[in-house]
Length: 232
Image (spheres, helix red, strand yellow):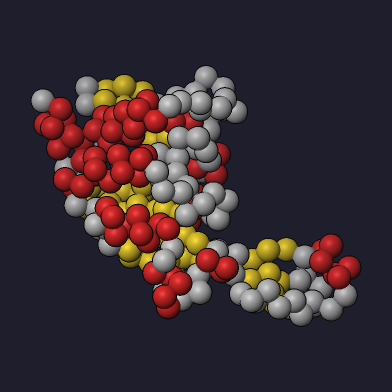
């Protein structure tokens, strides 16, 4: 009966993409959100499954943190981000009594919720389901991939930073790439966040090797970060 419900809730999804990173704070949730918005602008219907249980930031990014999920005959109804219902979102952030409440759970409870998110969310028909995973390489990733494997995910997007993305042999040694090999999943793209820093005064560039051509250090006070999501 459980397998029937899983088939019913995910049968209308054409492609599933996971977004992973080797550590936190590299822009993984930002990439997931921007990818969903880009697909929506290209006319696609998109769902976001936020299984980053300890850092559910996507509801706040999409300004729906005050909304709530509801129950239907097939399980949970995800939160719709826009009136046209072209982006739907499911996150543990909607299930917390307080938005800033810490999720202090042991592994088995986290894994059970991830499996429940996969089986019990009534997504309807979607062109893409983007799965925003926790940072690192853990049993939560294994649980997510194992639960989604029967539905043949398209692959994964790896979000990294310049110092961890040197190309060649070093690139193949990335911990998250090793996780994908272990899980027998294809890597679709690598996104290098924080690849450049531009100074507002002199429009100078801090390249991947950290060479600063910004003039006087005082100019950094009015600098800003540009994050080109470079795919390769």
